[in-house]
Image (tube, rainbow, N blue to C red; front, side, top):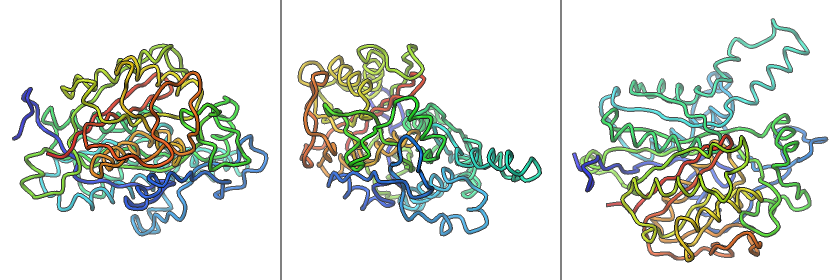
Length: 414
């Protein structure tokens, strides 16, 4: 078993899978990010007329039937459909995993879970009565359904967990998956996040909070991370999963290795249910924890894959946090949310995939729709076009409602 300088098991990423508004395979997803094409448009899955915001970032053309069959597809919420499909793609990408099923695990993150199922069920109950509620309502709604379905399909009997830390859930799932491998509880883990929050009640609720962009005249440009004119995030749906395994195991089976998982930090703001702690104190501490875990200095980081939601408070706090950790000349910063919108519990996993692909290609995608810095942001934002950067360690941030913070560090493949 190969160990790092501190005697810990080395962990690598051998499979990636995505189902996002920017693309449902790695090639199209990466091409959209590099091109900096915003994907927000008027919602098509239902009539949004009368809602305070009528646009979002949907996964177009997604069909769960090839992955799950028609019968099971009908018995699963869209969040679980997207999550299973992305995880299945990641496992196919990883090749022949093999191994002991009891040593193979699933960690799946989500912020909300089966929201559309819940809304539909309540509507059915109110209009048609309790006898019309589906017997599958509970398993469709429950947040842990995705983790359960993945394990059942692959016969994996190792630790099977669901992480629900709002917008940090996907990142937390990946970090906790690495901890399972380090502690010896698993050899292989498929980990990531899924979310399908584009529903009438969700849009109404986020709109009432004042969290959503209201730039309905040009939805594709509404998500503007770190831009002076940012006015809120754009809701998105999707899923992304990674396959993590021991380095020695991956090399023994001659697997393709995308990157090495090197560090993980997680903590709490303990400040406010939705707002970040003043000055980004919690986010800064979280990034430092991830760097310490990786055994790296701030100067080792090639770029920051930011949480960058396009909300005034979050982006300003994250900018301050970056300066606290990296000093007056921090590394370049980018956010994928200008393209994908905010995928809530799937955001961190989607951004981890982007960070890993950037490491492999030596190209960092631009922050879509960014035009000018506001007075509250003093960062080198990668914008306009993709930037070539020498492959090196990347830190990827996720900060969620409830004060949940998570940072991941990936380094080039050994």
